[in-house]
Image (cartoon, rainbow, N blue to C red; front, side, top):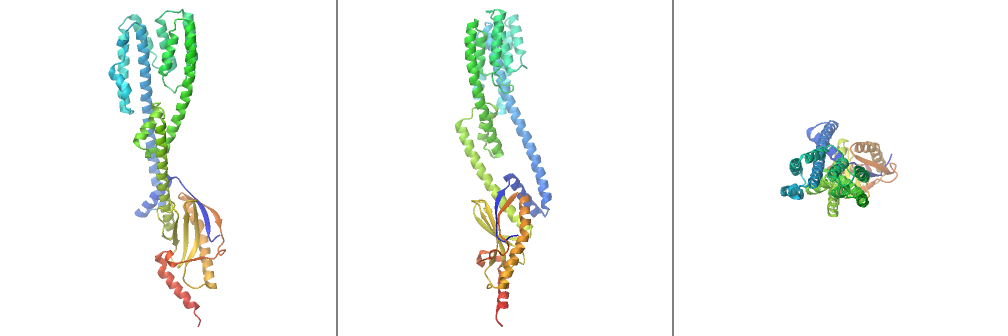
Length: 443
Protein backbone atom coordinates (compact mmCIF):
# COMPACT_ATOMS: atom_id res chain seq x y z
CA UNK A 1 0.00 0.00 0.00
CA UNK A 2 0.94 3.62 0.00
CA UNK A 3 1.76 6.71 1.88
CA UNK A 4 0.91 9.83 -0.17
CA UNK A 5 -1.76 9.15 -2.81
CA UNK A 6 -3.32 11.19 -5.61
CA UNK A 7 -6.65 10.33 -7.21
CA UNK A 8 -8.84 11.90 -9.83
CA UNK A 9 -12.44 12.27 -8.76
CA UNK A 10 -15.65 11.86 -10.70
CA UNK A 11 -18.87 12.99 -9.08
CA UNK A 12 -22.11 11.16 -9.79
CA UNK A 13 -25.23 12.88 -11.19
CA UNK A 14 -26.52 15.71 -9.05
CA UNK A 15 -29.84 13.93 -8.45
CA UNK A 16 -28.15 10.78 -7.16
CA UNK A 17 -25.70 12.71 -4.96
CA UNK A 18 -28.48 14.90 -3.56
CA UNK A 19 -30.51 11.79 -2.73
CA UNK A 20 -27.50 10.22 -1.01
CA UNK A 21 -26.82 13.41 0.97
CA UNK A 22 -30.48 13.58 2.03
CA UNK A 23 -30.40 9.94 3.11
CA UNK A 24 -27.27 10.55 5.18
CA UNK A 25 -28.89 13.53 6.89
CA UNK A 26 -32.10 11.65 7.66
CA UNK A 27 -30.19 8.62 8.91
CA UNK A 28 -28.08 10.82 11.19
CA UNK A 29 -30.99 12.94 12.48
CA UNK A 30 -33.37 10.03 13.02
CA UNK A 31 -30.85 7.47 14.22
CA UNK A 32 -31.66 5.06 11.39
CA UNK A 33 -29.51 2.88 9.19
CA UNK A 34 -28.32 4.66 6.09
CA UNK A 35 -29.14 1.77 3.75
CA UNK A 36 -32.75 1.62 5.00
CA UNK A 37 -33.21 5.35 4.51
CA UNK A 38 -31.63 5.49 1.07
CA UNK A 39 -33.77 2.55 -0.09
CA UNK A 40 -36.91 4.25 1.15
CA UNK A 41 -35.98 7.58 -0.44
CA UNK A 42 -35.09 5.88 -3.71
CA UNK A 43 -38.48 4.21 -3.86
CA UNK A 44 -40.20 7.52 -3.15
CA UNK A 45 -38.09 9.29 -5.78
CA UNK A 46 -38.82 6.59 -8.37
CA UNK A 47 -42.55 6.74 -7.66
CA UNK A 48 -42.54 10.53 -7.91
CA UNK A 49 -40.52 10.43 -11.13
CA UNK A 50 -42.98 7.92 -12.61
CA UNK A 51 -46.01 10.04 -11.70
CA UNK A 52 -44.36 13.21 -13.01
CA UNK A 53 -43.42 11.43 -16.22
CA UNK A 54 -46.97 10.20 -16.71
CA UNK A 55 -48.35 13.68 -16.05
CA UNK A 56 -45.92 15.26 -18.51
CA UNK A 57 -46.72 12.64 -21.15
CA UNK A 58 -50.45 13.13 -20.65
CA UNK A 59 -50.02 16.89 -20.99
CA UNK A 60 -47.91 16.45 -24.12
CA UNK A 61 -50.46 14.12 -25.72
CA UNK A 62 -53.38 16.37 -24.76
CA UNK A 63 -51.71 19.55 -26.03
CA UNK A 64 -50.59 17.90 -29.26
CA UNK A 65 -54.03 16.37 -29.77
CA UNK A 66 -55.75 19.74 -29.33
CA UNK A 67 -53.37 21.40 -31.79
CA UNK A 68 -53.94 18.69 -34.41
CA UNK A 69 -57.70 18.78 -33.84
CA UNK A 70 -57.76 22.54 -34.36
CA UNK A 71 -55.66 22.24 -37.52
CA UNK A 72 -57.88 19.52 -38.97
CA UNK A 73 -61.03 21.54 -38.23
CA UNK A 74 -59.54 24.61 -39.90
CA UNK A 75 -58.75 22.50 -42.97
CA UNK A 76 -62.33 21.12 -42.96
CA UNK A 77 -63.77 24.63 -42.77
CA UNK A 78 -61.66 25.69 -45.76
CA UNK A 79 -62.89 22.64 -47.71
CA UNK A 80 -66.54 23.40 -46.92
CA UNK A 81 -66.10 27.04 -47.87
CA UNK A 82 -64.63 25.99 -51.21
CA UNK A 83 -67.56 23.64 -51.84
CA UNK A 84 -69.95 26.44 -50.93
CA UNK A 85 -68.36 28.76 -53.46
CA UNK A 86 -68.51 26.00 -56.08
CA UNK A 87 -72.22 25.68 -55.37
CA UNK A 88 -72.82 29.38 -55.87
CA UNK A 89 -73.10 30.35 -52.20
CA UNK A 90 -71.64 33.82 -51.65
CA UNK A 91 -68.29 34.18 -49.98
CA UNK A 92 -69.88 36.43 -47.38
CA UNK A 93 -72.19 33.63 -46.27
CA UNK A 94 -69.41 31.04 -45.93
CA UNK A 95 -66.79 33.35 -44.41
CA UNK A 96 -65.80 32.57 -40.83
CA UNK A 97 -67.24 34.89 -38.16
CA UNK A 98 -65.07 37.63 -36.69
CA UNK A 99 -64.94 36.02 -33.25
CA UNK A 100 -63.40 32.89 -34.77
CA UNK A 101 -60.84 34.89 -36.74
CA UNK A 102 -59.95 36.79 -33.57
CA UNK A 103 -59.48 33.55 -31.64
CA UNK A 104 -57.27 32.13 -34.37
CA UNK A 105 -55.10 35.25 -34.27
CA UNK A 106 -54.85 35.76 -30.52
CA UNK A 107 -55.60 32.47 -28.71
CA UNK A 108 -52.97 31.89 -25.97
CA UNK A 109 -50.89 28.72 -26.15
CA UNK A 110 -52.72 26.96 -23.32
CA UNK A 111 -54.87 23.86 -23.24
CA UNK A 112 -57.85 25.84 -21.99
CA UNK A 113 -57.63 28.33 -24.86
CA UNK A 114 -57.14 25.50 -27.37
CA UNK A 115 -60.21 23.66 -26.03
CA UNK A 116 -62.27 26.81 -26.46
CA UNK A 117 -60.93 27.25 -30.00
CA UNK A 118 -61.76 23.63 -30.91
CA UNK A 119 -65.34 24.15 -29.64
CA UNK A 120 -65.78 27.25 -31.80
CA UNK A 121 -64.25 25.52 -34.83
CA UNK A 122 -66.61 22.56 -34.43
CA UNK A 123 -69.57 24.97 -34.25
CA UNK A 124 -68.37 26.62 -37.46
CA UNK A 125 -68.14 23.24 -39.22
CA UNK A 126 -71.73 22.50 -38.15
CA UNK A 127 -72.89 25.94 -39.34
CA UNK A 128 -71.30 25.52 -42.77
CA UNK A 129 -72.71 22.02 -43.11
CA UNK A 130 -76.17 23.30 -42.35
CA UNK A 131 -75.82 26.18 -44.79
CA UNK A 132 -74.70 23.89 -47.58
CA UNK A 133 -77.42 21.37 -46.86
CA UNK A 134 -80.06 24.09 -47.08
CA UNK A 135 -79.29 25.03 -50.68
CA UNK A 136 -80.59 22.02 -52.61
CA UNK A 137 -80.46 18.23 -52.65
CA UNK A 138 -77.24 18.18 -54.68
CA UNK A 139 -75.60 20.36 -52.13
CA UNK A 140 -76.72 18.08 -49.31
CA UNK A 141 -75.14 15.09 -50.99
CA UNK A 142 -71.88 16.92 -51.66
CA UNK A 143 -71.66 18.25 -48.13
CA UNK A 144 -72.46 14.90 -46.58
CA UNK A 145 -69.89 13.20 -48.78
CA UNK A 146 -67.30 15.71 -47.70
CA UNK A 147 -68.14 15.50 -44.01
CA UNK A 148 -67.92 11.74 -44.20
CA UNK A 149 -64.14 11.98 -44.64
CA UNK A 150 -63.48 12.73 -40.95
CA UNK A 151 -61.54 9.52 -40.39
CA UNK A 152 -59.55 9.68 -43.61
CA UNK A 153 -55.83 10.46 -43.67
CA UNK A 154 -55.29 14.20 -44.43
CA UNK A 155 -54.07 13.73 -48.01
CA UNK A 156 -56.97 11.43 -48.94
CA UNK A 157 -59.38 13.85 -47.29
CA UNK A 158 -58.04 16.73 -49.36
CA UNK A 159 -58.22 14.69 -52.58
CA UNK A 160 -61.81 13.73 -51.78
CA UNK A 161 -62.69 17.40 -51.27
CA UNK A 162 -61.11 18.28 -54.59
CA UNK A 163 -63.13 15.62 -56.38
CA UNK A 164 -66.35 16.84 -54.77
CA UNK A 165 -65.63 20.31 -56.13
CA UNK A 166 -64.57 18.88 -59.50
CA UNK A 167 -67.87 17.01 -59.76
CA UNK A 168 -69.77 20.25 -59.26
CA UNK A 169 -68.03 21.72 -62.29
CA UNK A 170 -68.44 19.29 -65.14
CA UNK A 171 -65.87 21.00 -67.34
CA UNK A 172 -63.88 17.86 -68.19
CA UNK A 173 -64.92 14.34 -68.96
CA UNK A 174 -64.49 11.53 -66.44
CA UNK A 175 -61.18 10.25 -67.85
CA UNK A 176 -59.60 13.72 -67.79
CA UNK A 177 -60.81 14.33 -64.25
CA UNK A 178 -59.39 10.97 -63.19
CA UNK A 179 -56.06 11.82 -64.83
CA UNK A 180 -55.84 15.05 -62.82
CA UNK A 181 -56.84 13.20 -59.67
CA UNK A 182 -54.12 10.59 -60.19
CA UNK A 183 -51.49 13.28 -60.81
CA UNK A 184 -52.59 15.11 -57.68
CA UNK A 185 -52.41 11.92 -55.64
CA UNK A 186 -48.87 11.17 -56.82
CA UNK A 187 -47.66 14.69 -56.03
CA UNK A 188 -49.36 14.95 -52.65
CA UNK A 189 -48.11 11.51 -51.64
CA UNK A 190 -44.66 13.11 -51.30
CA UNK A 191 -45.86 15.65 -48.75
CA UNK A 192 -44.10 15.05 -45.42
CA UNK A 193 -46.73 15.16 -42.67
CA UNK A 194 -46.76 14.07 -39.06
CA UNK A 195 -49.46 11.60 -38.04
CA UNK A 196 -52.84 13.35 -38.32
CA UNK A 197 -51.37 16.65 -39.54
CA UNK A 198 -53.46 18.35 -42.26
CA UNK A 199 -52.05 19.64 -45.53
CA UNK A 200 -50.51 23.11 -45.28
CA UNK A 201 -52.94 25.78 -46.49
CA UNK A 202 -50.77 26.85 -49.44
CA UNK A 203 -50.60 23.27 -50.76
CA UNK A 204 -54.34 22.88 -50.20
CA UNK A 205 -55.10 26.00 -52.24
CA UNK A 206 -52.75 25.06 -55.08
CA UNK A 207 -54.08 21.50 -55.12
CA UNK A 208 -57.62 22.86 -55.37
CA UNK A 209 -56.63 25.08 -58.29
CA UNK A 210 -55.08 22.08 -60.03
CA UNK A 211 -58.17 19.96 -59.39
CA UNK A 212 -60.38 22.72 -60.77
CA UNK A 213 -58.20 23.44 -63.82
CA UNK A 214 -60.34 23.98 -66.95
CA UNK A 215 -58.07 21.80 -69.09
CA UNK A 216 -55.22 19.32 -68.86
CA UNK A 217 -52.59 21.83 -69.97
CA UNK A 218 -53.45 24.17 -67.13
CA UNK A 219 -53.47 21.24 -64.71
CA UNK A 220 -49.95 20.22 -65.80
CA UNK A 221 -48.59 23.75 -65.25
CA UNK A 222 -50.14 23.89 -61.79
CA UNK A 223 -48.77 20.40 -61.11
CA UNK A 224 -45.23 21.63 -61.80
CA UNK A 225 -45.72 24.45 -59.31
CA UNK A 226 -47.21 22.05 -56.79
CA UNK A 227 -44.21 19.70 -57.09
CA UNK A 228 -41.88 22.61 -56.29
CA UNK A 229 -44.02 23.61 -53.31
CA UNK A 230 -44.02 20.04 -52.03
CA UNK A 231 -40.22 19.89 -52.24
CA UNK A 232 -40.01 23.16 -50.31
CA UNK A 233 -42.43 21.74 -47.75
CA UNK A 234 -40.28 18.65 -47.28
CA UNK A 235 -37.18 20.77 -46.69
CA UNK A 236 -39.05 23.04 -44.29
CA UNK A 237 -40.41 19.98 -42.46
CA UNK A 238 -36.90 18.57 -42.03
CA UNK A 239 -35.76 21.90 -40.56
CA UNK A 240 -38.85 21.96 -38.33
CA UNK A 241 -38.11 18.47 -37.01
CA UNK A 242 -34.51 19.50 -36.30
CA UNK A 243 -35.80 22.51 -34.34
CA UNK A 244 -38.25 20.26 -32.50
CA UNK A 245 -35.41 17.92 -31.56
CA UNK A 246 -33.44 20.86 -30.19
CA UNK A 247 -36.47 22.10 -28.23
CA UNK A 248 -37.15 18.61 -26.84
CA UNK A 249 -33.53 18.25 -25.76
CA UNK A 250 -33.64 21.63 -24.02
CA UNK A 251 -36.92 20.81 -22.29
CA UNK A 252 -35.64 17.45 -21.09
CA UNK A 253 -32.24 18.72 -19.98
CA UNK A 254 -33.64 21.60 -17.91
CA UNK A 255 -36.76 19.73 -16.73
CA UNK A 256 -38.48 21.44 -13.80
CA UNK A 257 -35.73 24.07 -13.48
CA UNK A 258 -36.82 25.72 -16.74
CA UNK A 259 -38.55 29.13 -16.31
CA UNK A 260 -42.28 28.93 -17.13
CA UNK A 261 -42.30 31.53 -19.90
CA UNK A 262 -39.42 29.87 -21.70
CA UNK A 263 -41.03 26.45 -21.26
CA UNK A 264 -44.18 27.67 -23.03
CA UNK A 265 -42.13 28.94 -25.99
CA UNK A 266 -40.26 25.65 -26.35
CA UNK A 267 -43.41 23.55 -25.93
CA UNK A 268 -45.05 25.53 -28.73
CA UNK A 269 -42.14 24.59 -30.98
CA UNK A 270 -42.70 20.92 -30.13
CA UNK A 271 -46.50 20.74 -30.07
CA UNK A 272 -47.79 23.64 -32.18
CA UNK A 273 -45.18 23.70 -34.96
CA UNK A 274 -44.06 27.20 -34.02
CA UNK A 275 -40.63 28.16 -35.39
CA UNK A 276 -37.67 28.06 -33.04
CA UNK A 277 -36.71 31.71 -33.21
CA UNK A 278 -33.01 32.62 -32.76
CA UNK A 279 -33.94 34.79 -29.77
CA UNK A 280 -35.78 31.87 -28.11
CA UNK A 281 -32.86 29.52 -28.77
CA UNK A 282 -30.38 32.03 -27.33
CA UNK A 283 -32.50 32.48 -24.19
CA UNK A 284 -32.85 28.72 -23.77
CA UNK A 285 -29.13 28.11 -24.20
CA UNK A 286 -28.31 30.83 -21.66
CA UNK A 287 -30.84 29.38 -19.23
CA UNK A 288 -29.34 25.91 -19.75
CA UNK A 289 -25.88 27.24 -18.87
CA UNK A 290 -27.19 28.91 -15.72
CA UNK A 291 -29.05 25.74 -14.69
CA UNK A 292 -25.94 23.65 -15.35
CA UNK A 293 -23.94 25.94 -13.06
CA UNK A 294 -26.58 25.68 -10.33
CA UNK A 295 -26.68 21.91 -10.62
CA UNK A 296 -22.90 21.66 -10.58
CA UNK A 297 -22.77 23.73 -7.41
CA UNK A 298 -25.48 21.56 -5.82
CA UNK A 299 -23.57 18.47 -6.95
CA UNK A 300 -20.33 19.71 -5.39
CA UNK A 301 -22.01 20.71 -2.13
CA UNK A 302 -23.69 17.32 -1.88
CA UNK A 303 -20.33 15.61 -2.57
CA UNK A 304 -18.66 17.58 0.23
CA UNK A 305 -21.36 16.52 2.68
CA UNK A 306 -21.16 12.89 1.53
CA UNK A 307 -17.37 12.91 1.98
CA UNK A 308 -17.64 14.33 5.49
CA UNK A 309 -20.37 11.92 6.59
CA UNK A 310 -18.61 8.95 5.02
CA UNK A 311 -15.47 9.74 7.01
CA UNK A 312 -17.54 10.04 10.17
CA UNK A 313 -19.32 6.77 9.44
CA UNK A 314 -15.91 5.12 9.15
CA UNK A 315 -15.01 6.39 12.61
CA UNK A 316 -12.90 9.44 11.80
CA UNK A 317 -13.00 12.83 13.44
CA UNK A 318 -13.26 15.32 10.59
CA UNK A 319 -12.31 18.98 10.39
CA UNK A 320 -12.42 21.49 7.58
CA UNK A 321 -14.88 19.92 5.12
CA UNK A 322 -16.69 22.95 3.73
CA UNK A 323 -19.53 23.09 1.19
CA UNK A 324 -17.10 24.60 -1.28
CA UNK A 325 -14.47 21.87 -0.97
CA UNK A 326 -15.12 20.62 -4.51
CA UNK A 327 -15.88 24.11 -5.82
CA UNK A 328 -12.57 25.73 -5.07
CA UNK A 329 -9.28 24.36 -3.85
CA UNK A 330 -9.56 23.31 -0.22
CA UNK A 331 -7.95 21.31 2.58
CA UNK A 332 -9.45 19.14 5.31
CA UNK A 333 -7.94 16.99 8.05
CA UNK A 334 -9.24 13.85 9.70
CA UNK A 335 -7.95 11.30 12.21
CA UNK A 336 -9.10 8.62 14.61
CA UNK A 337 -9.12 8.89 18.37
CA UNK A 338 -5.72 7.92 19.66
CA UNK A 339 -3.76 9.06 16.61
CA UNK A 340 -2.32 11.94 18.60
CA UNK A 341 -0.41 14.36 16.42
CA UNK A 342 -0.95 12.33 13.25
CA UNK A 343 -3.60 13.35 10.72
CA UNK A 344 -4.54 12.54 7.17
CA UNK A 345 -4.56 15.72 5.16
CA UNK A 346 -7.02 15.77 2.27
CA UNK A 347 -6.34 18.41 -0.37
CA UNK A 348 -8.76 18.95 -3.27
CA UNK A 349 -7.64 20.56 -6.51
CA UNK A 350 -10.97 21.55 -8.02
CA UNK A 351 -9.47 22.92 -11.23
CA UNK A 352 -8.02 19.58 -12.34
CA UNK A 353 -10.44 17.39 -10.34
CA UNK A 354 -7.88 15.64 -8.19
CA UNK A 355 -7.65 14.87 -4.50
CA UNK A 356 -4.49 14.16 -2.52
CA UNK A 357 -4.20 12.17 0.70
CA UNK A 358 -1.10 12.13 2.87
CA UNK A 359 -0.27 11.59 6.51
CA UNK A 360 1.03 14.68 8.31
CA UNK A 361 2.35 15.20 11.84
CA UNK A 362 2.02 18.26 14.00
CA UNK A 363 5.43 19.64 14.94
CA UNK A 364 6.38 18.49 18.43
CA UNK A 365 9.08 16.06 19.49
CA UNK A 366 12.57 16.10 18.00
CA UNK A 367 13.36 13.79 15.08
CA UNK A 368 14.73 10.43 16.14
CA UNK A 369 14.77 6.80 15.11
CA UNK A 370 11.73 6.24 17.28
CA UNK A 371 9.95 9.13 15.61
CA UNK A 372 10.67 7.66 12.17
CA UNK A 373 9.30 4.34 13.29
CA UNK A 374 6.11 5.98 14.54
CA UNK A 375 5.83 7.91 11.27
CA UNK A 376 6.07 4.67 9.33
CA UNK A 377 3.46 3.00 11.52
CA UNK A 378 1.12 5.97 11.08
CA UNK A 379 1.40 5.78 7.30
CA UNK A 380 1.04 2.02 7.25
CA UNK A 381 -2.04 2.26 9.45
CA UNK A 382 -3.66 4.78 7.08
CA UNK A 383 -2.71 2.69 4.07
CA UNK A 384 -4.61 -0.29 5.45
CA UNK A 385 -7.74 1.88 5.87
CA UNK A 386 -7.59 3.77 2.58
CA UNK A 387 -9.30 1.06 0.43
CA UNK A 388 -12.34 1.08 2.70
CA UNK A 389 -12.75 4.81 2.18
CA UNK A 390 -12.49 4.38 -1.60
CA UNK A 391 -15.13 1.64 -1.49
CA UNK A 392 -17.51 3.67 0.68
CA UNK A 393 -17.25 6.79 -1.45
CA UNK A 394 -17.73 4.83 -4.66
CA UNK A 395 -20.93 3.28 -3.31
CA UNK A 396 -22.18 6.78 -2.49
CA UNK A 397 -21.47 8.38 -5.85
CA UNK A 398 -17.91 9.71 -5.56
CA UNK A 399 -15.52 7.72 -7.69
CA UNK A 400 -11.82 8.10 -6.85
CA UNK A 401 -9.38 6.73 -9.41
CA UNK A 402 -5.91 6.49 -7.89
CA UNK A 403 -3.26 7.88 -10.25
CA UNK A 404 -0.24 8.10 -7.92
CA UNK A 405 0.60 5.73 -5.09
CA UNK A 406 3.70 5.75 -2.86
CA UNK A 407 4.61 3.10 -0.34
CA UNK A 408 4.66 3.81 3.39
CA UNK A 409 8.00 5.36 4.26
CA UNK A 410 9.01 6.21 0.68
CA UNK A 411 8.82 9.89 1.58
CA UNK A 412 9.22 11.41 5.05
CA UNK A 413 6.00 12.26 6.83
CA UNK A 414 5.42 15.96 6.43
CA UNK A 415 5.74 17.93 9.66
CA UNK A 416 3.29 20.85 9.88
CA UNK A 417 2.67 23.73 12.22
CA UNK A 418 0.28 22.66 15.03
CA UNK A 419 -1.92 25.65 14.24
CA UNK A 420 -2.68 24.16 10.79
CA UNK A 421 -4.33 21.03 12.20
CA UNK A 422 -7.51 20.72 14.28
CA UNK A 423 -7.37 22.06 17.81
CA UNK A 424 -9.28 19.08 19.13
CA UNK A 425 -6.06 17.11 19.23
CA UNK A 426 -3.87 19.86 20.68
CA UNK A 427 -3.94 18.55 24.26
CA UNK A 428 -3.07 15.04 23.15
CA UNK A 429 -0.35 16.44 20.87
CA UNK A 430 1.21 18.41 23.71
CA UNK A 431 0.98 15.42 26.05
CA UNK A 432 2.67 13.05 23.62
CA UNK A 433 5.28 15.63 22.71
CA UNK A 434 6.12 16.13 26.39
CA UNK A 435 6.34 12.37 26.89
CA UNK A 436 8.72 11.99 23.95
CA UNK A 437 10.87 14.86 25.19
CA UNK A 438 11.15 13.28 28.61
CA UNK A 439 12.08 9.95 27.04
CA UNK A 440 14.83 11.62 25.03
CA UNK A 441 16.39 13.57 27.93
CA UNK A 442 19.90 12.36 28.91
CA UNK A 443 20.11 10.74 32.35
